[in-house]
Length: 109
Figure (tube, rainbow, N blue to C red):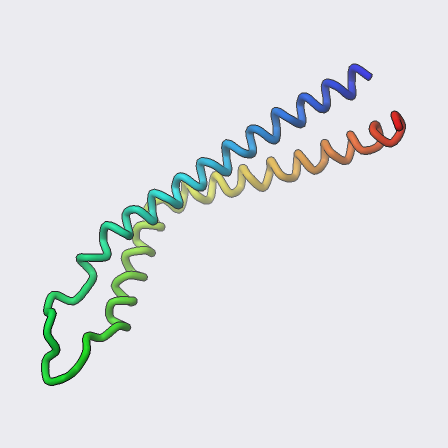
C-alpha cells in the first residue's frame, strides 16, 4: 500500500514537471508571436496609394512575414528542441509509471 502511495505521489510530481515544461514551450511560442505581431507594421508596403491601378502584392508581404518568422524561430530553435525532447521523455516516463500503477490498482480492487 505504501509503495502504491509513493508511486502515486511520484506520478503527481512527474505530471507537474511535465506541465511546467509545456508551460515553458507555450511561453516561447507566445514570445515569438508577440515579436511577429510587433514586426507586422514594418512588413507592410510603404505606399498607401495604388500605382497604375495595381494593388500591393500580397505574396511579397507573406514572403517577408515567413522569412522573419523563420529567423525568429531559428533563434529559439535549440531551446524549443531541448524542451520538446524533454517533454517526450517525460511523456514516456509518465506512461511507464501509469502502466506500473495499473496492475497495482487492479489488484487492490
